[in-house]
Image (tube, rainbow, N blue to C red; front, side):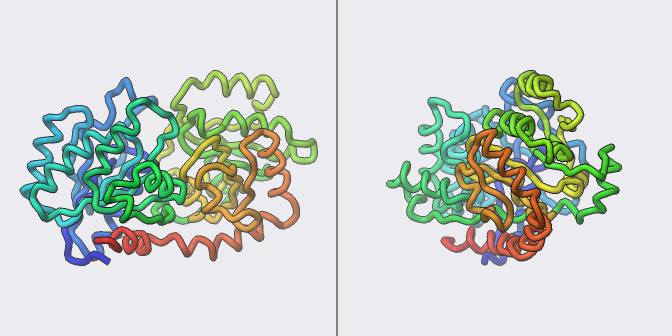
Length: 380
């Protein structure tokens, strides 16, 4: 484990919002137990025309316990150079990059190459994806450029580790990369009483609730889940769906599915960005979290569900099933409406949910932040 180091985490942090910022800030606090930590975040993360949501920025106050440098401009090469020379002079011991899409490869790669000129700073990456969910012609070139400056990496799914080692076998980082599961999101507070959570969301506590949580894009499969709701037998008509997250694409196709099947009374749309303070309300109301993804590497939503001990239905794609043992933490099914419908029926049968909740208490112990830090520091 690193001790007495100056560590810089490069990636989203306040005033940016979302799961990546939440993760980076939580990682910073873990590292701060033994080190000095700076979060280097973006003055411009995405140009507005590339950002599909309503806002990139949080309305929460700036954390007073974190050192956040709002500096990087993702599309300005002059900024990459000047910021690189600034940190070359600072000479941090380690820089940890959060790499989730090739768009940032040129920015991160140029910055890192300049800093490495000091002959001191080690470059590490946490890789959410090597192959993005939504592919572009420039993906491999940008990722190749970035990976060339790294000393080591930690992949958050075995699939991403495989992609890294097979697509870029000649890179130094491919020989010094390893897997570690996404740690628990344990910073959303404690679970609250289910009836109280339902009251705050204006829901009937006598109903059963599936929860789809997070931003909405095609690969997340919300349309499949809506079609699955329409396939449920009459005996399960007491099961409703909560959709909690912002649309990152046209919502009309989803509204059309709801209208086609007459699901208006059973689908509760909270289609806005969910601030951190409200996350526990949704997970406290939910009986099951559904992740009907068409493709995936790993998912932070699973780690929120683990924290709140809510069983999951996940599709058998990417690295999702690595985290959710079938029949223990939830149900694994094929990414089809029929597969999801069968999983919903199955998970609500008998004592499955109470037993899975008990299992989750034990299973979640493996996803510690201390273990993640040990993995990051193992090659350095």
